[in-house]
Length: 326
Ligand code: HSE
Image (cartoon, rainbow, N blue to C red; front, side, top):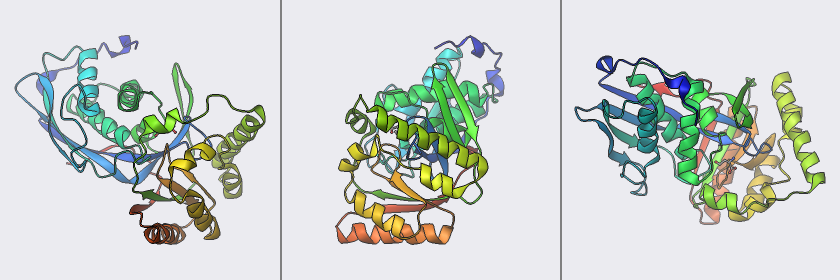
C-alpha cells in the first residue's frame, strides 16, 4: 500500500478523549453488480466507542451483540487490527493509545456488510479523535484492508458505501476508483435476514470462476441499465436491470426459501428482488415504504411457517455514511 500521502503533521496533544461513531450496514452488489455496486442503509448499523488511554496501543475492551463470536484479540479483531494498521502507517503507534468498545446492532454473516460497518466505524472514530487528518478517500484503502482481514478478499462494495453513504460504483480496484451515483428519491429497500449463517468467505468460494459470454452480455447490459436508470431516475429501467444471471443461481442454494421469497416480493409489487451481498439476506426494492413493509411482513410470515427465524428492515438509502453520536 502506497502511503506517502499520509505524511501529515498530526498533533496528538489535541486528540479527543472519546468519540462514539455509528456506521451503516450496506447492500453490496445491488443484485446485478457483483463486487462493483453497493448502497448504504439507514438502519441497521454498528457503533464504536473509542477512548484515549495513557498507554500506547489499541485494545478492545468490550463487544456486545455478537453472541461471543468476535475475537477480543487486537490482531484478530478487524476493527482493532485496522485502527492499529492505520496508526502504524501514520507513525503514531508509539504515541497513541486507545480502547475500543464495539456494539454490533446487526447479525454477523448476514450479507449486510456487518464487518464493513464495524471497520468503517472504527477507522472513522480514530480519524475523528486525531482531528480528521485523513479524507474519506484516504481512509478507504484501510477499510478495504479490513475486508481482506475479515473474509480473505478486499472488495470495496460494502466499505465504500458505508464510508461515503449513498450508492457507489467501484469502477476499479487497482487503483481504487470510486464513483458516487445518484440516489433516486423514492428508492426504498425491503430487507429480510433469514437466520442462517452464510460466511462471505464460503459464499465466494462457491462462485464459478468461468462464465459464459452470453451470460456476461446479459449481466453487463443490466449493470449499464441500472446505472443509466439511477441517473435518469427511471424506476422501470431500474427494475428491468436489477437481475443477476451470474451469481444468484449458485448462491440461492445457500438461502432457504429463496425462490418462494422472490415470488412473494414480486407478487406484492417489488421492482426487483435478489441477494443482499453474499447472503443470506435478501433485498426487494420498491418506491413506497408501506409496500416495502408489507413485503417484509409477508416474507417473514412465510419464513415463520417454515420454522426459520428472521429479521426485517425497511430503509431508504443512507446519504451520510458514518456519524458521530456524542
Ligand atoms: N460483493 C461481495 C460478494 C459482497 O458478493 O461476495 C460481500 O458482502
